[in-house]
Length: 232
Image (cartoon, rainbow, N blue to C red; front, side, top):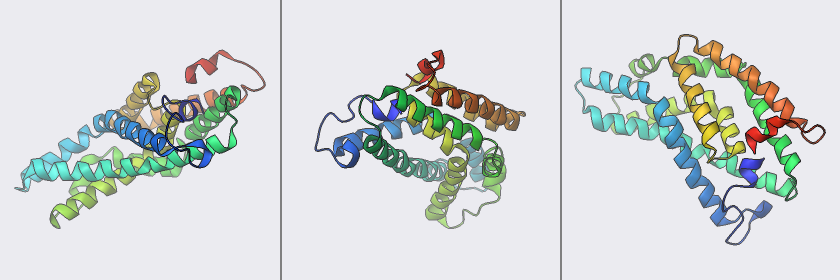
């Protein structure tokens, strides 16, 4: 996958581990993942933050501190999830020969097509339903356990968000964590899915487009097409 296999600095220093990924590679990847999560998921979480602030104020709690803890739990889930694409990068380095550009493109196409298919699944629908109703989530969860309870509730919401968006985030990892074009497009998709009345329709429409794009990229080793430039 172009993004995982050719990230700036990947493979450049430190003792290489399994699949040619050094400790420095892993640290850089996770740091870039953390930056990507903050850039993409914090804007998506704005309605959730607003809902939490509203509820904590009406309940007479320290809204700012409680909301910060809540969002920390939410972000913690996303930070830990970065270990999954890191392991996939290790596996890719072990399997795909260096310089096999067309096969990396095909691998990226497989990720995109799979992410597109996921948009039509029941898990996506259930998790998106929760993500589209941040006020309902906050009102139906007990925060009386103090900081620990607030952190757990934030982590639970983060899990729902992860369940909704994990496949699309793998697409971002596949095309490159620093690919601003894809980052912007996926962030807008996340927002549209959650905020717009037609969010569920948009999610499925995007899924259909991604399946078609992914299949086209998977055929790259056989038939060269201009769409490969989208993930180059």
